[in-house]
Image (cartoon, rainbow, N blue to C red; front, side, top):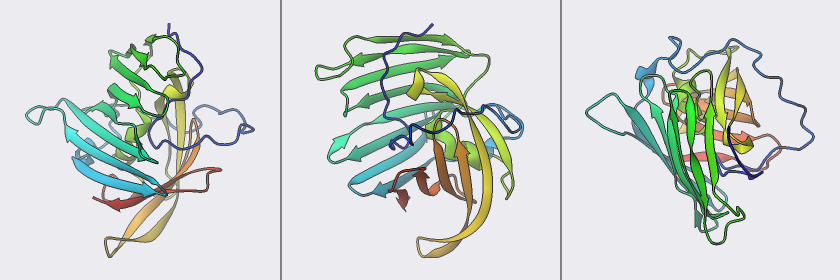
Length: 244
């Protein structure tokens, strides 16, 4: 069981929600790939530091090994700032399966902290409000799933580990903290290959549509696990690669 209030978490790319008139999500419509699948080439994942920017906002993705001497977890530290407010977020995921293992974060916009762990397919942890939070009491999580899940903030790493090509489709199980820790299937389709300039050089990118908790479009570098730009359906701005 999980006890929670109807709050909106500041997650992954921290974009505004799409229109409320969007039809219900259909669930998985393509072949399913779970964390640990043989279809994932985990050797494509390497530590890196990437900066994204939009109007009045900056987001830094810093991926490191939690323990450089072992094959344990990756730690993705996300340093997010908009209009002078920061919302640091740490997502840990398995170096062997790419499944989420824990997440620690602080939401400066709504003044609460979260510490969640995913152990043996079980999500446990709590959200603790600050003095100025709209959450009035601590939220406690204890929920069991049938299998491992991916974390939305790590989607560019998961996609880079898959055998992408134009027309490739897949359904990925994602942990959606926007809706009380629900499992949401992201239905992925690679719709085209495009040319872009990056750091003064011409590169190839995949244009990817992801239909999950939100409808998103990503432009993914073909040889590096990074998005050149990313956009939510119905939102006018895009996050764009700045450096890294």
